[in-house]
Figure 1 (cartoon, rainbow, N blue to C red):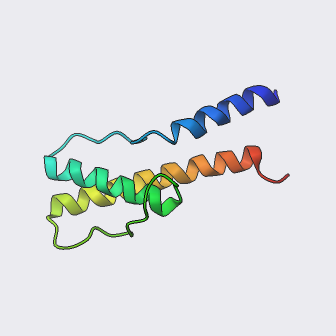
Figure 2 (figure 1 turned 90 degrees about the horizontal axis):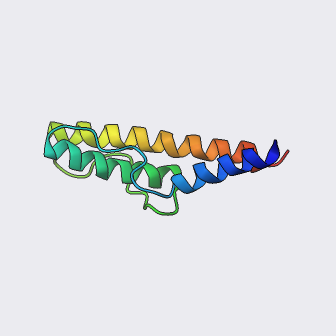
Length: 95
Protein backbone atom coordinates (compact mmCIF):
# COMPACT_ATOMS: atom_id res chain seq x y z
CA UNK A 1 0.00 0.00 0.00
CA UNK A 2 2.86 2.37 0.78
CA UNK A 3 4.53 1.98 -2.64
CA UNK A 4 1.50 3.11 -4.70
CA UNK A 5 1.04 6.11 -2.40
CA UNK A 6 4.67 7.08 -2.92
CA UNK A 7 4.24 6.74 -6.68
CA UNK A 8 1.16 8.98 -6.61
CA UNK A 9 2.97 11.53 -4.46
CA UNK A 10 5.91 11.55 -6.87
CA UNK A 11 3.56 12.14 -9.82
CA UNK A 12 1.91 15.03 -7.99
CA UNK A 13 5.27 16.51 -7.03
CA UNK A 14 6.67 16.32 -10.54
CA UNK A 15 3.48 17.63 -12.11
CA UNK A 16 3.81 20.67 -9.84
CA UNK A 17 7.08 21.51 -11.61
CA UNK A 18 5.39 22.09 -14.93
CA UNK A 19 3.93 25.46 -15.78
CA UNK A 20 1.15 26.28 -15.80
CA UNK A 21 -0.76 23.74 -13.71
CA UNK A 22 -3.85 25.79 -14.32
CA UNK A 23 -4.17 26.37 -18.07
CA UNK A 24 -4.89 29.89 -19.25
CA UNK A 25 -8.66 30.36 -19.56
CA UNK A 26 -10.20 31.72 -22.73
CA UNK A 27 -10.74 35.44 -22.91
CA UNK A 28 -9.31 38.71 -24.11
CA UNK A 29 -5.52 38.84 -24.68
CA UNK A 30 -5.06 41.32 -21.82
CA UNK A 31 -6.88 38.98 -19.42
CA UNK A 32 -4.91 35.93 -20.59
CA UNK A 33 -1.54 37.66 -20.19
CA UNK A 34 -2.52 38.90 -16.75
CA UNK A 35 -3.68 35.41 -15.74
CA UNK A 36 -0.23 34.01 -16.54
CA UNK A 37 1.50 36.85 -14.66
CA UNK A 38 -0.74 36.36 -11.64
CA UNK A 39 -0.27 32.61 -11.76
CA UNK A 40 3.51 32.94 -11.65
CA UNK A 41 3.23 35.38 -8.74
CA UNK A 42 0.86 32.99 -6.95
CA UNK A 43 3.29 30.09 -7.27
CA UNK A 44 6.09 32.29 -5.91
CA UNK A 45 3.95 33.53 -3.04
CA UNK A 46 2.99 29.95 -2.13
CA UNK A 47 6.66 28.96 -1.98
CA UNK A 48 7.53 27.44 -5.34
CA UNK A 49 11.29 27.52 -5.86
CA UNK A 50 10.72 27.90 -9.60
CA UNK A 51 8.91 31.26 -9.41
CA UNK A 52 9.77 34.55 -7.78
CA UNK A 53 7.47 36.16 -5.24
CA UNK A 54 6.26 39.23 -7.12
CA UNK A 55 3.81 40.33 -4.48
CA UNK A 56 0.10 39.88 -4.04
CA UNK A 57 -1.19 42.68 -6.31
CA UNK A 58 -0.70 43.61 -9.96
CA UNK A 59 1.84 46.42 -10.27
CA UNK A 60 1.06 49.86 -11.68
CA UNK A 61 -1.90 51.22 -13.58
CA UNK A 62 -3.69 48.28 -15.16
CA UNK A 63 -6.94 47.82 -17.03
CA UNK A 64 -9.91 46.17 -15.34
CA UNK A 65 -9.42 43.09 -17.60
CA UNK A 66 -5.78 42.81 -16.58
CA UNK A 67 -6.60 43.19 -12.87
CA UNK A 68 -9.33 40.52 -13.06
CA UNK A 69 -7.07 38.08 -14.91
CA UNK A 70 -4.14 38.66 -12.55
CA UNK A 71 -6.24 38.09 -9.43
CA UNK A 72 -7.84 34.94 -10.87
CA UNK A 73 -4.47 33.50 -11.88
CA UNK A 74 -2.89 34.36 -8.52
CA UNK A 75 -5.71 32.78 -6.53
CA UNK A 76 -5.95 29.57 -8.54
CA UNK A 77 -2.22 28.92 -8.77
CA UNK A 78 -1.36 29.76 -5.16
CA UNK A 79 -4.17 27.46 -3.93
CA UNK A 80 -3.04 24.73 -6.32
CA UNK A 81 0.54 24.87 -5.07
CA UNK A 82 -0.66 24.91 -1.45
CA UNK A 83 -2.70 21.73 -2.06
CA UNK A 84 0.33 19.97 -3.55
CA UNK A 85 2.41 20.94 -0.52
CA UNK A 86 -0.26 19.67 1.87
CA UNK A 87 -0.41 16.30 0.13
CA UNK A 88 3.37 15.95 0.14
CA UNK A 89 3.54 16.91 3.80
CA UNK A 90 0.83 14.42 4.74
CA UNK A 91 2.67 11.63 2.90
CA UNK A 92 6.26 12.46 3.81
CA UNK A 93 5.97 14.74 6.83
CA UNK A 94 6.75 13.83 10.42
CA UNK A 95 4.47 11.12 11.85
